[in-house]
Image (cartoon, rainbow, N blue to C red; front, side):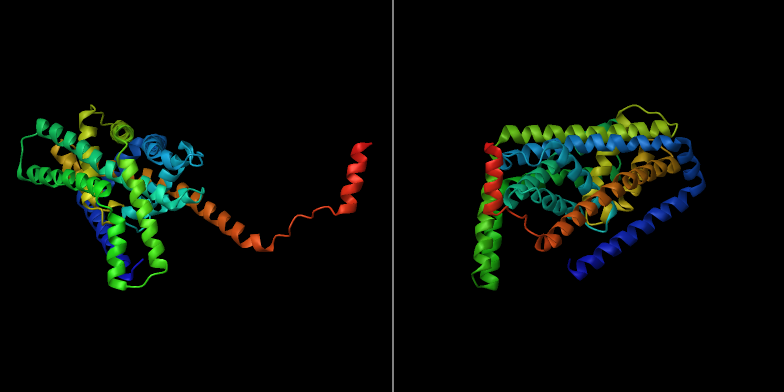
Length: 357
């Protein structure tokens, strides 16, 4: 990773942590801790709820990957594990969201699948996710406008969310018709010059563009993938509903839908901040205030989600490290393995004679 990019990520994460700390100090950490104590060990139920949401999301990814995986090397269960690892890396490590997506591509390719097919499935899946997040955020905005009187802050939020749909549709259209990666490699060749490896990269780019065009042309599969993703997003709203119930503040389903949809939209807007540090907490406080939640309750809800991210993410990252370590041990030990001894001709004759008797 470029040193400047790394520096920016660390600075953004530091600012997010400072913003979260300021919100906690402002609303009083004692009240927040006492609110979290009401939930107790019940917060552990958030882990399987999140796992269910990611399993639904992975089902949509599986649909996108299936045409490039005729031998079924990457099943739904495996992709669910990869989706959990992607989520853990994006939430806990100082990387932008794209870091988890790149890792997901690498893990699936370790199953022996072609890089073009895997990368195409992830790129198309991300495009569908952007469209779904717009639709989900639009639902949240409609419900929010129905609950409160419009104000300037709500108007700005509406404008920000509305910009996401043209962006997502443009990305999908560009992937479908634009031969993006061939153009990119051609531009690099014009700037850098030379052939050899660059020519092979151009060939790989053409294959990737072809894979993307094939996926984008399967409209039924795209719609099914989108429906699975939307189901996962709705499970995220159920998580908020259940958390508020654990915090002794039961609500209907409308408030969790608003909080989940618009919080996720704001996290996407602040995608450059690792794990949405500070962005998520500020979103819960701002939206919670509009919906009648106190500051300490909204922050307790946000911190409960952070605890769930730790409980889900740490085991997944450790499992990823175990897989990487096992792979490295295999690679390093392969040159030193003794070949299996084949029986010589005399031994083979003796065995054959014994068999014949």
